Image 1 (cartoon, rainbow, N blue to C red):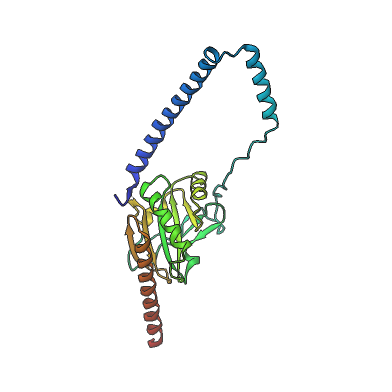
Image 2: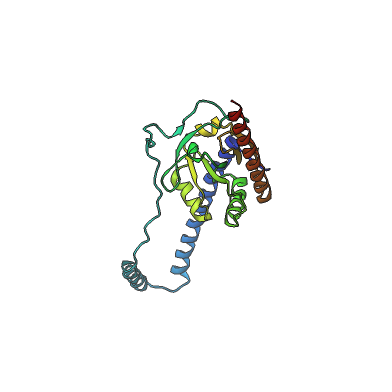
Amino acid sequence: MGDCPIRRAWSAQRWKIWVGGGLVVLAMGALVFGGFWWGRHEGGGSAATDSQGATAGREAGANTVAAAPVTFPEPPKLAPDGLEPGLRATATAQAGQAAPDFYLFRSGGGWLRLSDYRGKVVILNFWASWCPPCQMEMPWFRSVLTDKRLPPEAVLLGVDIMEDAQTVGFFLQQGGYQWPIALDTKGEVAQAYRVSAIPTTYFISSNGTILKMHRGILSPDVLVQTAQEAVAASQKENAAGSLAQKKS
């Protein structure tokens, strides 16, 4: 399948995590018990030897500095405009209409407001780290950006749906994904954009008009081609607007 229905996929992911975690705990318990039994019955170790080994282990551990866990900043309660992070428009996304503006916290810190990208064709990708099609798509996006295949008039933005900052931050760090990613922690932006399955990607003109919506995976070639078409459509839209102003 090329996309991930949000509710069903989220329920399935939680079930996998619960079952997988339980199996890992059981396996670790079996290994620990088995190693202890072997050391006591087959390894020929004595209590004195065990005590000496434990003492040496403690001494070695005392000289080891534990690595500090990496943490990622949590979204503040208020955005810079004094309102809660989220939508800044009441309309829902429709082709040919203005893209609903939003103000969201960025993974890793900072803020992302859609309207700040006026003048650029925006590729707006909705995704989540637990979604297998999204996991497949993200490296493709990275390769397109690394190879500079997108038109210079276009910019890629991501919106993660209803995941915490730590989960998203670790996923992006491990994958080396460095384009701007906003955290839609309440899911209200995804709802305004009528996202029923992920990944879902919108192409928005430099004037903020929705040109096209694509549901499902975008391969590198399709992403680049659609971005080029969006830039051409945006330029045509701008030219038509300039002509209308001259006539008026």
